[in-house]
Amino acid sequence: MNPGANVWWIGPLVLTLLRLLYTEGRLSRAAFKNGSFVFRAGIGLRLLFMLGICGFTVGIVLSIGREEFWLLAMGAALVISVCFAWPATITVDDAAITRSLWWRRLEAIPWKQVSAIECNAGGDLQVFGNHGQSITFTRYHVDPTRFQEEVLKRAELPHVITTSAPPTLRG
Image: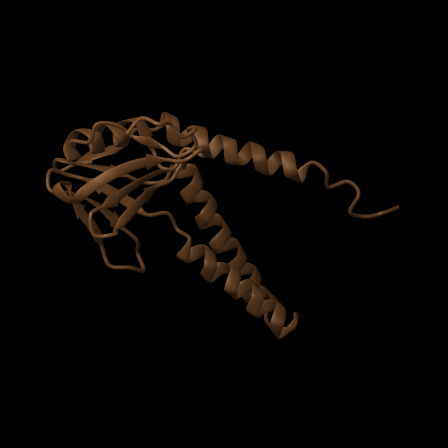
């Protein structure tokens, strides 16, 4: 009997987990601190990342001396990759929209320089600045409706551009 024949359920389980994380982001609300809205990834996604990082790190440390070096190096590369994939924190205040990542400097786009907000087919929102900057609000961030409303209001934009919509002849 094939030992890998009974793993068909992993695909639907992963898709269900992703849908739950997506739904959590839609149902959660942004934090309001010191006059600013703070949009983070949902707590479920952050916990999943944290458990993955900790679990793989412990597994790698416990396997030192019992596994081949290349396998430990691949595990370490996976842990480092997940650390760099940690979702950004996006802050909206009266002056600008700001993206904060632990491994990069802050990126801010002042409201006068915001040129557009775009929504793709997956539900990710991307805010563009006049000088080529962009800030991506993923489908796993909390309170996308509030985020969209705040950007449209503060940047004085007429609408959200939908990239999955069919092209029109209107300008």
